[in-house]
Image (cartoon, rainbow, N blue to C red; front, side, top):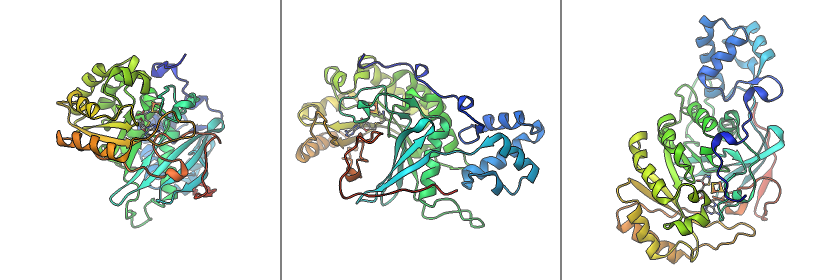
Length: 392
Ligand code: SAH
Ligand code: SF4
């Protein structure tokens, strides 16, 4: 049963209402929020205003309880308390790497765990978030791929990762000043655990919330969704989310890509490339990022670099070369630095930006493809691990 690539609706998604207990207001779209408020007795005429007020408390001010919502009358707040909750995933542990990368182990409904990684850089701070517990796909170089899919994350759990990182980074605006400088969390990448396009609706709703100007206010150009190549969902991503796209390309022949990224058997390189051609125009974005993991003697030859250039001809693109990050039992080795540089030079000479991604947070297993929940992970000594409780 290896390499099965189910359609997104085949994957178990927990509907908000089916979770035990009251409805979580976090993760609802604006329309969804209004709807549940009306159902709980808010007069329809007032519902837009009430939804706006609550929205701002949650996403612009970081509220996690109804008592702080002082511009709502006390009885109204009491009614909210009776009907709803404001739940974000619980941070179980936080690890800080020698290079400043932070990795949060986060517990979600059902006791499952996912990882969220914050990567500080000079000019930006990027949060790498997860979309699924595990992954249905089985890319042979990816640690997450060795863990079976447990379930899709809800939109609350996806946007909740951003909220809890804002808590930890102390990024909520100071009352009266309304800003928080410097902005430590400026970018989001959907490059954590899971295939975001197999959880399309929840990822879309969560990103719409993140982009909303009256809340987290993240520009769509600062959100990058990475896919292994779920072709039918790519045009939808352009139309319904409009964020930047990264594609896990990793090979230049179907023979090799079938092995590395088995979804290639379903949608091969030619089909994928054809779909990618339309993405920049559809999403009104400049270019696509091609991710290319550098595996020693597997996909890293000069001939590969030249084939890659030929394949992507005509697509506005940047090639992100990712030195393979090892994990216990991994069947591959990282290409030598000299080889990675030679590959990069060929791509660069053809007119494409070809940055080599500096591995971050390796000492805490937070680098690309090293994420995996449960306690199987190797831990090294240079870790500072401490338990934290999200701010209320
Ligand atoms: N499922 C999505 C997003 C998560 S993976 C996808 O596959 O695109 C994020 C990126 O990390 C992908 O480009 C993936 O190919 C890469 N990656 C996975 N395992 C890796 C490893 N061991 N070393 C380096 N990059 C890896
Ligand atoms: Fe899943 Fe992406 Fe890992 Fe492939 S690389 S197994 S799609 S998380």
